[in-house]
Length: 179
Image 1: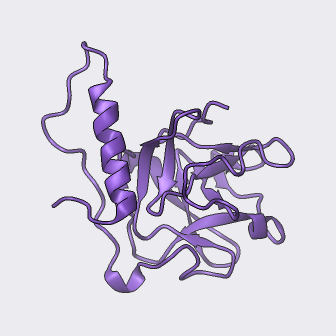
Image 2: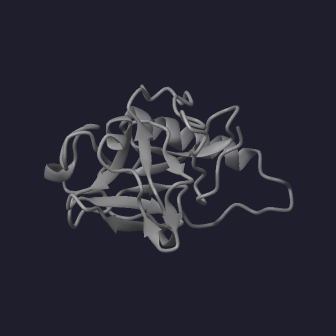
């Protein structure tokens, strides 16, 4: 079944473009990459539905998208860039962003029992972190995921390097995106 949501169409087109740019020595997979099941319709919602105020939900998906100057980055299903912070830890997964921080950097949360749809993001790299407020925050390669409150979904790097230089768009493998 083809994606019908505009952000899914954008992500699918970006993946096709990436596949077309692959080096000649790389072969395209003969089977589609495994994806997690989409969340139940009751669990899906907009950027601020579910969870606590100031959090962003990812019930619909995590996508790898070509962004231009930042290269291939991870986005939520609505096209918002996802970020990681140098103040956090990947091993073990720990979030240092609490209180006022979460008003600018919205933790990417997922409803209990819901699994995000993955497109170009390896299932083995996606995890969960239990936040002190009771929400489950998604992680990528151990790094807690966030989106910037001013991100409109146009793949603009609203928060790259943040006010203190410790926030970076994240790649689908958990690395910092090129600045």
